[in-house]
Image 1 (cartoon, rainbow, N blue to C red):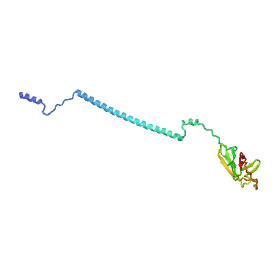
Image 2: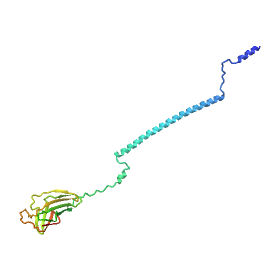
Image 3: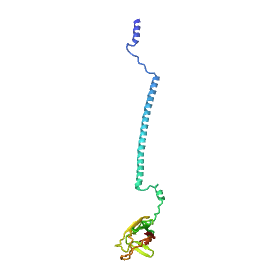
Image 4: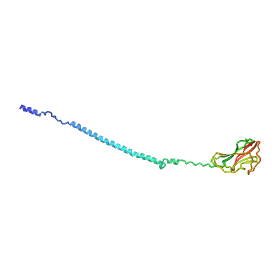
Length: 235
């Protein structure tokens, strides 16, 4: 009888090498559920954040792309304004611009064309020939056309009422010479006088002008204009 009791007791002893399986407690299950729930929430949060970032990037790119054409259109409008005409902002200045009054073009005044006479010396020796000079001056403010040809010139020498010499008496031919004399400018013509007498028609004259300190008057003429008298002396 005692052996049977021993054998039954040995029969309840676990076999060598086997492991007893224990079920997790309720606290362990609760911690696992909390961890799994937190991980799931974290994954959901990451997914939502990714969508939000992607949406923000798309919105920024769309805004940039929509802004660029506007800037391009503005520049195109600005560049098109000069070719298309003045802009509205330029209109007031164009309207306010004062048109200058055109100044009158000066015209030639023939009354301001003057003639003067001069000699190269005030007195001459017995063998010296006086150089007679006719000078035409434009005293106006505009250029003038003046005929200064030999057809208009005369070098006249007198002594009191005595007509001594005229360049026209023996002039071979007369010519017209029209020149434009600028305002304030002059033209001159020189005539060397041989101290001889002359008459109209260029007839020979034997008499010579007297010397010995006699005074003579030279008058220069151009057309209807005559110079003041220039006095010189012959010795």
